[in-house]
Length: 421
Ligand code: EPU
Image (cartoon, rainbow, N blue to C red; front, side):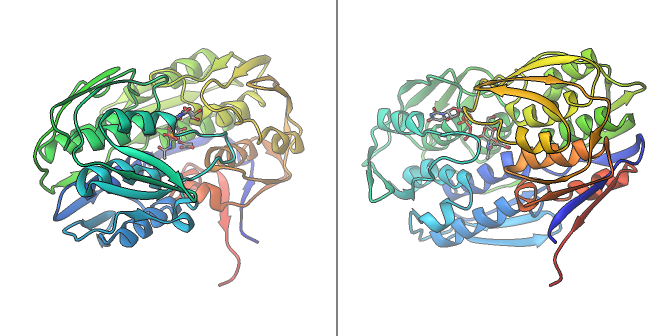
């Protein structure tokens, strides 16, 4: 059966290298490549399911998308483009909404299916729409399609109600070719935004302030395709830290930056996992069972919501009780029932969960419901008696190229089993 199969195997030890941030940074750069007529080359991308879906979107739009080397992808946006992302593709992967800004900027029109909600919350798009309208776009929803058009996009001052990652990205990629200056206030500050802005600037865009709450964009006439290396995956790095917290041991993670993981390192430090920087990443060590600390998720540089299921899995195994509050998504605790199957003591109500650490989890068949929840179940299995089978592993495959291989390299007993071909 298709699953991750996990057994506790003592403390972790060794060194792993994280992959590129394909899901949370790479997909956005693939979409942004539509802005530059010609051939863009992206390095440090890894095959994950969400990238497959994004490449299908690109091909539907009329852009070429080919692997041209190991972890090296070529996007040919020479044109002509068909500015349409159909429902079947958009529902496979929400980040297809990221083509809206680039298509409007490049083609003056876009038809992108509404993605709808998903397993972690309602995931509205109102800020994307209001921002594009402020730049002069006409938008309407017709038969489930966002139909957007504009004669000319014009720079505008846009204040986001909440520092949405997706809205910041869409507005940034629309603003780079708009007439005049755009000021984005209350913008998301995630490192993936800075990585996108640096990519766009190298293509000829004029963006300043990315990584802060105020981003200024001076529109330019055109962008030129370039070669770019996508940042290392901080969420994957954090997942390995959480695994080290659950299993104990000492691990070195290469290809990431501790300053991208400051709040996670701080919290894990309070819980008993020492994290320190190395020249190419970080190292973490945990000598004894960790203890509980309250956690509340917030936009960057706060504790990322993507680590919430992982930290709940960790807290389920430590000494003491903690309150976990989810402030970013409205429905991200669905995985708690799966942890209950493993003997976890968690009470969840609305945006809060009280997690009481137990002496030992017990392995069980459990089901992944989204990418991070699935990873959290794999990590929980590292401290469970007997075998844990994480079913619906494709959720994990959406964002992690080889989570089992990485944990295995650190001594964990984790296998990704697949049905016979
Ligand atoms: N929101 C609105 N209106 C909008 C946009 C967002 O109300 O117009 C709300 C959402 O409903 C949500 C909150 O704002 O409650 C945050 O949404 P955001 O737009 O920041 O998230 P996103 O762009 O849809 C990306 C990542 C998520 C990550 C979030 C937050 C990708 C492909 N997805 O989603 O990644 O959790 O930012 O950092 O980059 C994951 O990796 O597991 C994952 C879900």
